[in-house]
Image (cartoon, rainbow, N blue to C red; front, side, top):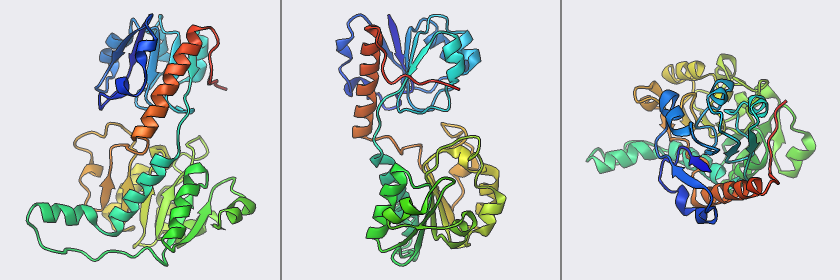
Length: 316
C-alpha cells in the first residue's frame, strides 16, 4: 500500500512517529503545499493519506479523482476542509487524531504580549540599528481581556489573563453564566464584549452560524485602542472588514495566525500592514502537538489495516 503524508512543511513528520512499524506500507512525505494537478500527481496512487489540519481541501471533485484512496487521516478531530459526505459516498474512511489545547493558547499570549509591547518594531529596530526605545507599551494589568468562546483553549487563555491581573469577560452563543462563573469570568452580551475589550481573542468553532461573526458592525463597536487576536479560524472574521478597520485605525491592531488562503500569498496586504502581527498558522505547531498528531495518525492506520478503524469522523 501507498501512504502520502501531506504538507510536512518542516520535514519533521518522519521523526514524530515510528513509521517503520508499517512495513507493508510505502510512505511518502511531501514538504511543500500542493494544489490542482500537482496534488493529483502525488495522490493518484495513494491508498492512505495523512492530512495536516486544513492545509489541503478534500472536496467531492478531488475524491472523484482518487479511486484508490481508502483511508484519509486528519490531524485533530475536526477538519472543515474535508467533505465527509463525499468521502463516505466514495468509500473512504476518514479518521482523526488526538490533539492538545496548550500550543494555541500559548501562541495567543505570544501575540498579545508582542503587540502590547511592540516587540516586532522594537526588535527590528535594534537589529537594524534604528532608534533606541521607539514606542511606549500598553500595560495588561487592569485592562479587559475579552474571550469570544470559552472552550478548552479559551479557558487556558483566561487563566493567564487572571495571572496578569486583567479583567476577563467572555461571550459565545452557548456560554452559560454557570460555566463563566466557574472560570471566574464575567459573562457579557455579544455587543458588550466588543465595546469593553482592550484585547479581544477569538476561540470559537467555525460553523455556518459563526462564519463572519465579526464584521463591520462588530469592529465598529470596538475601542480604537483595542487589539483583536485570532488564533482560531479565519472564517470567523470578515477579512475585508478587518482590513478596513486596520487601515482606518478603527482598532489599534490585530494579531493573526489564521488566514482565508494558506499559505498567505506573498503580496497579501496582511503581510505588510504596520498594525498587523501575522504568524504562519503556528497555533498547533509545537513538538508535543506534532508528536500527538503523528502518533495518532500511525495508530489510525494500524487500526484500519486490522479492520477495526478508530476515531472515525462522519458527516451529516
